[in-house]
Length: 381
Image 1 (tube, rainbow, N blue to C red):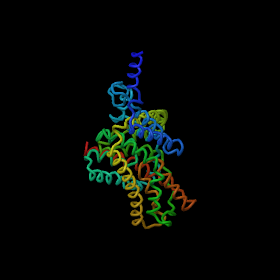
Image 2 (image 1 turned 135 degrees about the vertical axis):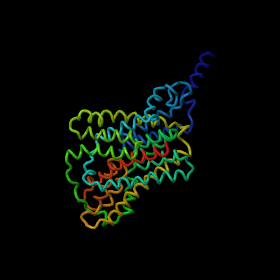
Image 3 (image 1 turned 135 degrees about the horizontal axis):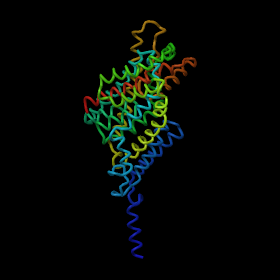
Image 4 (image 1 turned 60 degrees about the horizontal axis):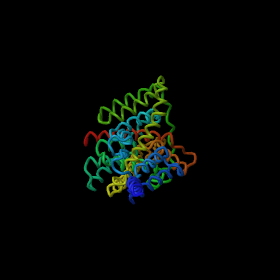
């Protein structure tokens, strides 16, 4: 009988009940919250549901040495997590993004590329704020990229510059991407007048197939020569778009924007969530990262909208004016930020459809965030 009790006591030591702490329960509650937001509110469910469940998995209290934790060398979760730590997953996601993105609106209105560039101010603004709060230059660069509203880019850069902060940065980036409508709408209304919100823009011109094929080649050469350090992201983005537009690689394009990106999204979301273990994640540093991430998002939205207003000062013909509401779409949360432009525009004028015009700075923001990541990596890596 004594042996049975000893065995039970030994078994108890290995259970989650014996090793659970309050921080574990807090993290599990956060995971449940993210899952709930994804399912009930439908806020970025393809991201929040895997991340939320990953958080729950990562915060089941595990006795050290069992070889199942994501941070234990050789465990299954640890092997899957290498795609995040080594930066394999983000370029594959960019391949899929390129294969599903239509750059026609940007090709037809190249001036709107500047809006996507202006919105990247949020990245460098957050970088300076992070330095002021005592983060190292590498950590500040990784935190600042949250302002680009691009989860894969944030993971890629943080894996290179500050791998110890990947979990907090990734969860922050994806969470704020899901909250785009809530964060951006009040800023857009604050910065624009009713008259500005009613500006009607010309429909984008039709773009030829030749232009669509040439764009990824020329776009890649131009951006890669400027920031060679952004090669993995930029190369895969434009390659995916070439697969889509070439007309002769439809099977490859379908694979890239379908099964491949779905599989990688599952893996990156789940493993990033599982990496947010309570003893690593629950800290003052994580709270600072979440605060800076929100500020970078706000700065990016401010910059995009105000830059459009500045552009309009130099545009004489009324028919060529740009609606400032599309300035928010300069962040690369595709297509959610462009949809916010459309929704807010329709509130002021039910006949004013801005979606196609907003897609130009939106896809420019994807390129811009990758270029910004390359710049930071070149200077800090």
